[in-house]
Image (tube, rainbow, N blue to C red; front, side, top):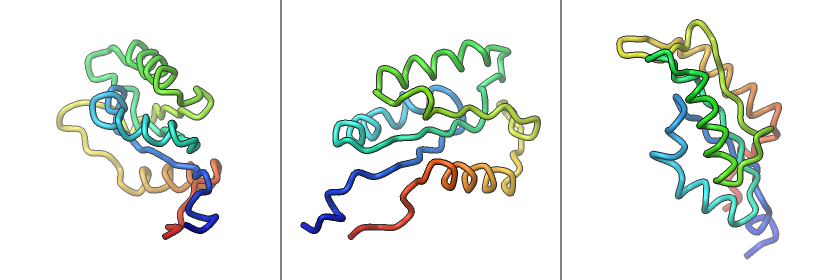
Length: 114
């Protein structure tokens, strides 16, 4: 193995709304953090479809603390064009910009070391 393959990575996990980190990605997050990788989470909505956005936001922060993702590395977007709910259509260009901005501002690794 080369030194580059052993290097700790800065990783960005993009999720649609709070609880995705636990329901779908907890094993991945655990794997990455257990190996010392620096995990950032970008949540694209507050999950406010039922008017419980502030509760779901708090639950996301608690889950991230349990998963050993520092809270200053968790960003939750509350944008009018990215609201949670059935039938909502999200602006793909806005999502791409948010992801790109997060990659840049957090120094996310974008190159494969293999």
